[in-house]
Length: 338
Image (cartoon, rainbow, N blue to C red; front, side):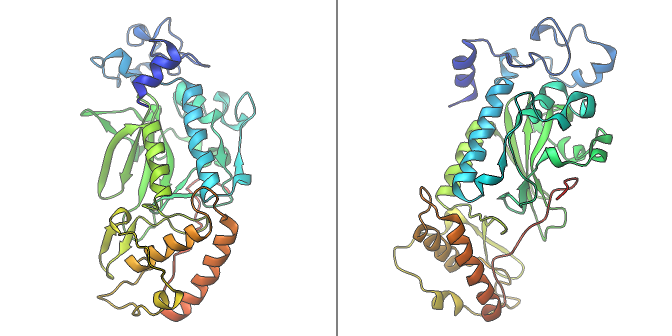
């Protein structure tokens, strides 16, 4: 469903937010007067809005609608490859540690209201969702993270839409890439003004912007088709390993196979050298993982713990035989406490 359709269903033609806050963090009589009569303290933020932008292009979703979209996505993750017991939900009034009196200087009120009412996976578990990239649990952020307005905003000033930058106070990171990653990593930035997500590949570029619901729905489908392969505690696989110096192809390009692949065949692959993969993830590895996941009920009745136990044991043996295995990844995003 497009953002415009969602707007029409939820507001009967009215595209402005109607839940909790009707404006992005400042009190004004109407959304159409947002650029006309503002307090001086908020003027710098509001000047960055595109005055020529169509009014119905902004705020296509209310806070409640955005929270529902995020919640549906996180619950899908919990049904697939992450522990549902670790998905926590806020009290009705929102997470108290993210109240405006504590962090109101950090984000605009509309964006902050979203963050306060989102569910989060507990940060004690690495929740990998993309290449070298994991979800952020804002409820466990250390207080000093919010002491400055520019936490992670050097990245977010790179968030552009239709040739114009989107102000960082109206954006927040959904998933953070590893600063120490060996090579490129991915980050997801949410733009609360337009209800869109931008997936960035650090040092490489971005994939453009996409409606948040469409982005999450397509991501879930990619998981189900195993065009992205993720398992709790392991690095998410998005590409095959081609050689020591090169990425291979994206997983959607790896052909499906109906023949059974044995452990022995996987283990018998040549050891890593400069001209051969030094990481787990050959096309045969990917085909074998798909087989293992489906053997354990993927995607509709996935026996996650049973599959994880098998893969953990398999990778321990593979490390000894092939000298490599599916990488363990348990880092936490910057500023989160374990």
